[in-house]
Image 1 (cartoon, rainbow, N blue to C red):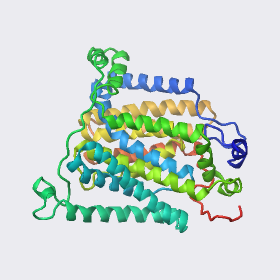
Image 2: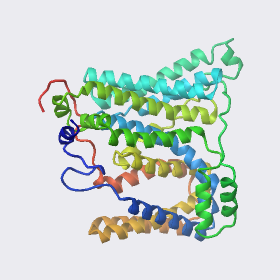
Image 3: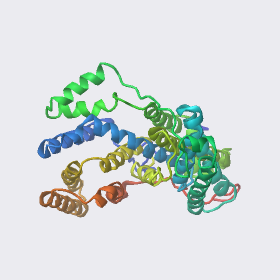
Image 4: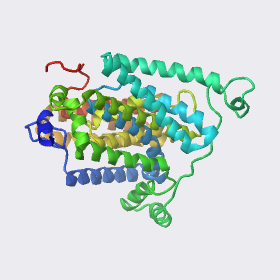
Length: 429
């Protein structure tokens, strides 16, 4: 059965490349080389600009916190699209998870809030499944409708449950824009290791202190939900790429007719994928509620859409989604930092793009290399002729980064072949 299903999915290689081309994702040595290069780049820019915040534990700890909800939304999108369903409704599912966590959290604590957020998001995912899988509604239309519906539902319920005159919620500080506060979920710190890395980071040694500052974010004041997110990313890879269940689910996104002919219940797998997709997005919303200890209107802030961008940037692979979430989380947290730190990122991006241009030229992509090099030159000129950036540009930086990244990496992307295509049981290929 496993061998036959591999044929049904056109023998898609583990790296996500096209069948028969031999294209795979980067090997582990290449990944390590890229990580080392990125660390060296950060160290150089930190030394040149004298902005130690670029590699500080506080900066990367905050970036990790901002990246988790984006990454969970992207992981949710991956589950849906690997089964062949486009999930534009991730933002709405995050809203449902955020509201559910806020409603349950002030009454029963943060872990109950997490469970409620997962359930709220899963309900949104199942609604999307009913519309797209059972009734054949266009995936984009259904997703947009869920986003609009979720916004209306949470605002209505907030007025009904949190702002009702004389209610317990209102007496504890709830209103139509927020829930009463919940208890704090205490983070964890790894004793000994966190202190040692902090001491190294304070010495301001080139590269060594920078590495210590970044690693410190993984052991100092870390949310338990961040650890859960790491487990979910690892589990997603193992389930989807190392089990027969995952192979069948991915076959539904590559060639559902062939999968059906081999006895796979395509509808069931699509429903399961969308339930998981919504639950992950809901967990991302719950993370936000636990982070600020309440539901707050508008707190998702478009992170569901950024999650979709990380999924595309990551080429529909968990590792790529995690890398994209880290990048967007780093840019997102800049909104809370001093402007000189944000200004220093112009030089960071300029040098990074220049390195990318050299690599593209080496690969024979001379036109692309020229465009990227010109962009790097403009960013350097911007950095050299200014001392700060407008606040409006800082606020828009995550979205501008999204456009830039997707533009640069669009040619290497390979989506599931049946992603977004209508499927009816028993139809011909």
